[in-house]
Picture 1 (cartoon, rainbow, N blue to C red):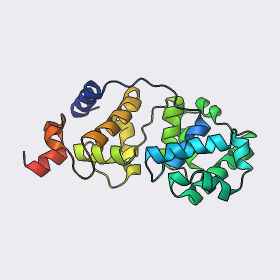
Picture 2: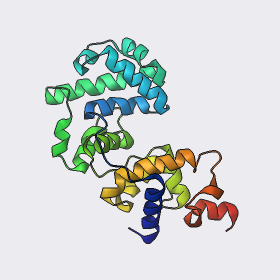
Picture 3: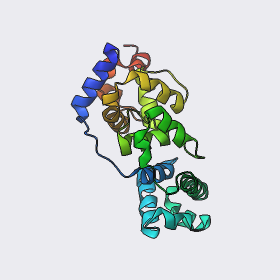
Picture 4: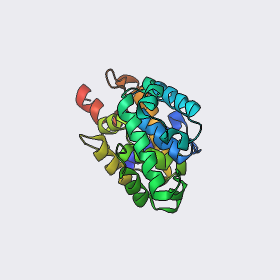
Length: 219
């Protein structure tokens, strides 16, 4: 870890606080929830997830439902037809492979093997897999969403064109024990300060180290 990245982590921890890991939900639930979160807001995807688990108390109930019915239940999350198909297909494949709809066995895998298993499902990319692994198991992996990708590139931690490439590089840049904390805090920074359209650079406590600020202000 470079001195500059160490300073980023230290300042972000000081400003937003150190986040203690707690399990967000069991891994199948986290998988479903993260698929629902694709290309929409947390508010919309959480509503869709709440509607889904209210309608289908077990994952077995869900896979017996018609895709069009599932789509209606998750309509608030956007791209409902596509997500309904992905969710049902993934759960059916898990049951076919494991005999039950459960992913707790991933705790016995190393992070690379667990990630490879999850991305084998249609609709599950590196970010979705990483969310399951870090939020359900605290694996040392950092999901990269649009906020993380934007902020890390602006700061100059990476220089990438895609979230997938950013996520790949961040594995070696952020210490394992800091990944959960850094992920949550950098998202918070992206929402409050380093916004997509109008970044509040003059107020940012990282601007003296920020590549974007240096280029845009000439300082």
